[in-house]
Length: 540
Image 1: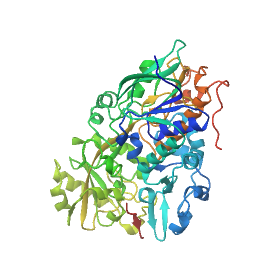
Image 2: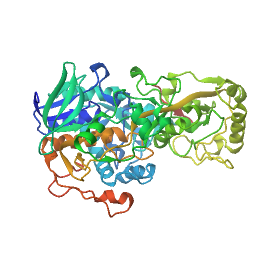
Image 3: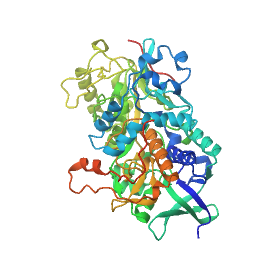
Image 4: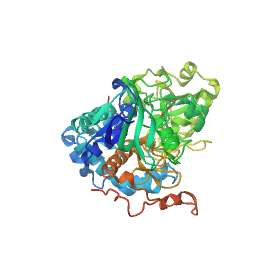
């Protein structure tokens, strides 16, 4: 027998889950329970480890002003360095980095609601925000040039974002239990999810709920699932975030309730991080293991060869796939090499490890743990022969077209010669952040079963949602996606919309990803929500 009755039960306690809990409360759910598997001191899922940056669409840079009071006084010519980032821009970036594979329904919901979601996080979630200077701003002359769509982050990054969500949820009367590991979804005779079974500090307990929202992350910390679904190289990856994301929610949704697997189960967000760190990133250092300034230098593997186009695009559009690229190299290790022309551009997170330094490239290579040092010297010599000088138009604030010429693997932007001593090398490996495979939801965050019908009483949000990302990921999208679908899930659950059971249309007759565009919920469903460290610098 279930021991208590709640209007909404939320499994997980990261950004998406707490957005769902706050939304459910806001929309009239009287009793909302959050079940966090981790103990209190480890609470918050991957959110704690994030940089807190928020990608969202806006037409005029001054639209973001209410999120950043005082920014104009703090930063000279603040708005001059910000470009508009329209919905078309955002959706275009999603399509480009996923090679057109992003779910056409969910991606539109995300993009169309992104700005409203961030303002809701600020106003209702009471999340203080600040300019994302150290992550996405580069100083050029007397102004900062911001990466498009990436100007705003939560104050104090992921740590501040998590703390603010918990404070707001508690102020609104959301009940939060820690060390509460949900093991089973309860299903009634009508086939509806009606609660959960969980293992707490006092043993097993059944808890009844009108709706259950799964916001408990992917399977990135589960070595068996990583190896099975993504491969042995990623199976051995270091984990950037929480060790508690073991795929429990995905297992329960599919095994207990018949949820449909969706998206790229062989894909993941794997970031270049320091190879000197342990298997799990220290909680106190959050996301500061990242090594994302490779575009200003070159990366070589243990065989002394380059293996990616370091200048393909801005780091915010390539880092999630280049971390996995490092994992595929011998020993899952690489070195990022810079000279004194660009070392001042390295993001502040490089300060958490000591570089290897030398006055010549020969002396630098001699110190590195490489299997073929002679090849490494040839690689750097060939690169320098094909690379350019700063006077040819080097510009770190945008893709500058400064490309090598004549290499088998060209560097297509920021291809400066490595010629000014001293020279620096940092280790890199791939650190897995979250997995791309998940379960299918509709635009109301209702979980879809393998019969193409919503599963009554079950919703999902955050990294459990499959279909948005394939092979790659635009930075700052995950937190906004989590909050967007968390907000929708909470609203749907509070309105009892989770119990509607009309089917979506199966795409058996349509080719490729176009089929997913037909997965529209029938008109009886609730209406989809509308839009309502140290600064880097460059002196040319």
